[in-house]
Length: 136
Ligand SMILES: [Zn+2]
Image (cartoon, rainbow, N blue to C red; front, top):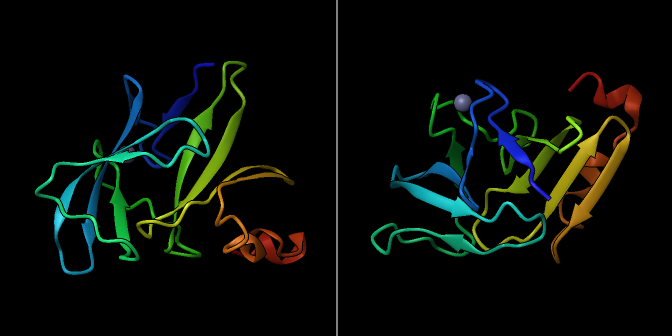
């Protein structure tokens, strides 16, 4: 199973080897690189020990290629990237930018799949009626 993960802005490849790479920043402007697992529902993260990740702290994720902010415009606690599967189908992936929160959503049109023990936390964001969502 080999999926590509893309920046929704520049469509650059965020997956290098078996990691997704992001540039992250706290509200206090601490900067560092975060490596995440490309496996949905696997919340293993890696970072340099000098970049001290605090549980519960909110991180802004940036594309390491074009530096665009990847936190969703509608809900900036969620980070949005794209997934392209082996058939070429494109999905939107949302995950929490808050350290320690384990939830991931894979969305395509009206279909949504949820992953992780904290998946109920942002559920209501995806359960909005379609007529309302299109204005987001
Ligand atoms: Zn980019």
